[in-house]
Image (cartoon, rainbow, N blue to C red; front, side):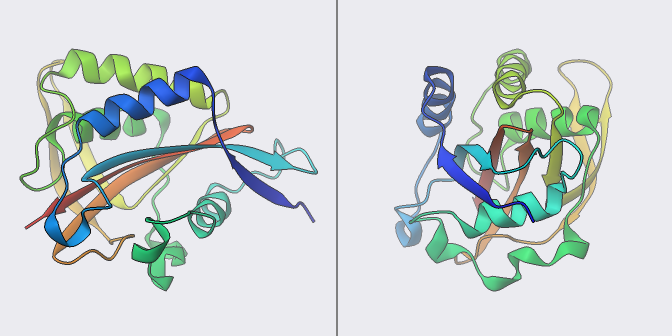
Length: 189
C-alpha cells in the first residue's frame, strides 16, 4: 500500500501565488487567525507512483488531515464524508476558481476586481500544480459563461469543511501527481 506524505511547497511561484491571495484576505474578530481566503500548496511524496491509482477524494481527505494550525482547529470530523465531495471537470474547475476569485463568498471582498487577472491567476495556479490535474470541491454548481466578464452561478449547494462561527466556506482542491493545492474561501453572514 502506498504511503503518502505532504510537504510545504516552497517554490518561488507558489510563494508568489500565496502572497497574492493573502493580500486579498480579510479577518473576522472570532477567527482573526483564519483569513476569508487562503491558498495552501504542498508537495506530494509517495513510495509508489500515483499515476495508476490516484483517488482524488482519498488524497483530498489525507491532505486535510495533515493541515497545521490554524486550519486544523477549525476542521471538524465530517470533512471526510465522501458522498458530498464533487469532482468537477477541468473546465468546470477553472470556472469555479475564477468565480470564487472575482465574487468571493457571501459579502466579503473578492480577491480580484476583474475577470482577466483572475483568469491569469487561475492559469498560473493550474500550471504550478501540474499535469494530470484532478479537482475536488465541496460546492455543487452549474456555471454559465456567456462572456469573459459574465460569470454567474446557479443552484449552489454544498457542505462546510471548516467550522467557523456563522460562516459559509467553499473552495476547491487541485491534485496532480506531484502537488496538491487548496484554494478556499470563507464568508461570514
